[in-house]
Image (cartoon, rainbow, N blue to C red; front, side, top):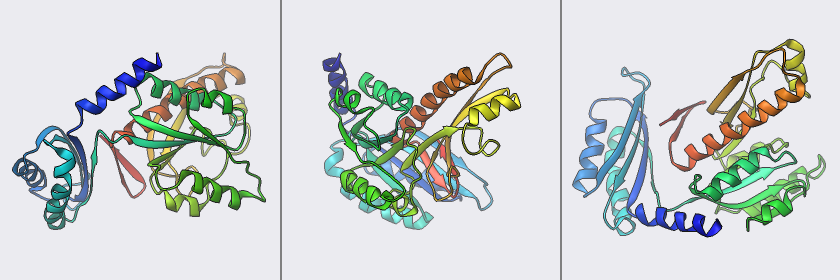
Length: 298
């Protein structure tokens, strides 16, 4: 099984060795798509996919995602990026180019609940999550043996109210600058503003969608007592506002009076793991552009 998965990753790397993705956001105006397309054509690139969205043609923001193939991409990319600066300056673009063959490195933070972590590991092992899980960081030892069975590093860093600053410093040290995105897979700790600043729009969290109605402890019990008919989950980027960052993905499922608290929790766990996995997949595939407190997902 693992041999097959590794072979799949090698093949993916080889097939897309010359493929890149470009993300662009800028004030809307005429000629943006034409300028980008002409630039890529003049530099020998072949566009294989292009998506764009404008918030408002009259002075709003414009967003674009382009996938393209370019022969000898590794050697050609530095000049491509240098030359694109002229186009970017003309249209006041914020932009980024990434190579598809360079898999993003993930650090997963987890506490005791394992459903989101297990889903990510399963998708990674199956080859459906095109990324490298570099490590799992936890304030508990519960998942250590399971995670290490995948050959993944497991860092146990206990956290208490008194040691939280030291624990976060230790987390930053083990993550270093090599990690592209952090996933809070039911990590039951609040992330400090200092930590967030290191990974702006690169920390993805998951939580139930009862907020802001049912805050505090036992949200499923609160929801049950109110007789809710829909439960769901929200994946979002972490900001200084608790559970208030740009939303990446959400999903819901209908429930009824026949579902007790235990069943509501079971349904909630299923939605959480699916929604988080989608959000992570879209991030590593460079499908998300953040503008203020919203996301555009191509």
